[in-house]
Image 1: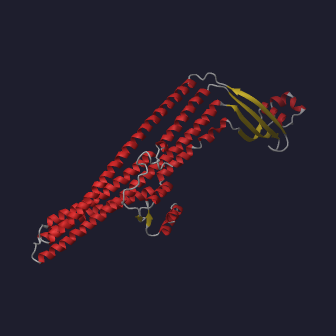
Image 2: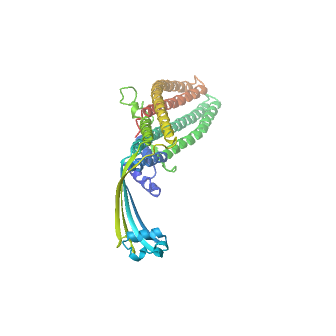
Length: 443
């Protein structure tokens, strides 16, 4: 429900703050939904595809009639025009047959309204051109769908980047607090005469070093959230709370051939297939430009002395015409050769793209395998580090080991914790890359 309110109000910046409130809870699914709706780059891709999708309408003149309406007001002394106007108005009189009226007529006025209709009966060039336009439009829409998949992939990366940056801040804050606690413990042991003041100083130096790293980590976490907000077209001042955490092993939708994923779902490949069909139709259109075209036509005109619609007379004309340009210099041959070369180029691009897509799937699966193994190693190391930390605390508290050992093990725990989160981040991103390679989110 929360995300639905955002979707309804995001286009009205003045209302967003009032509706959203202080913090926007954002799951990964919510983030991808917002990006699909409002990411400006994706909206531009869809607008471009929508503009290209109008090409078939423009090409429909190959089989749909063309209607032209016209209204004119004329005043002239041209002898032929005056003669014609009077005849069309049924206003020609015997005195108009004199040599003077015919050669040097007085200025004459008139109006006419007309409607002209042309209907193609056989226009092969235009018909194949229409087919090419339809497939080109489909290619544009498929490319926009692929852009949607790419946008989702970028959002997934940005979401997990932000979560990893947040976990780094938490891990460093925990390590700083632990170093400060060790400093206090060192002070207490010094008062008991068990250690010197050097232990507490070393712990405070460790805390200060972590604090410096924490300052940088805080900035990087904010930058990661800013990147995510930018992809979602949210204002940078909008507080967000990411509700999906870096836990578990993620999904495995396209893990193997039984996952139901198919490379043919990739819309960039579909776009190239449509482009290939468009280029084939364009080649036929180029050949057809050398054939005759047949069209029916008709017109009706009304002529009046004082009004284009009232009085006067009307006449009509109907007919069928053939137009043919059997020789257009070398332009026809050039058009055919160019269309053939363009078709060849599209076919080769489609083959290269399919090979690349299959390569991306293979490499993405290997990265998922590697990320899973890396996560298993990182989780095992984290357990060992925490067990070592408990031993180091006991050894320091009982005076067996120096504080340097405790601080070193504490640093190893922090590194191991970050390694687990980094490994999970790598696995989630690798799985998203595999889904992108299969075109799971191309829609």
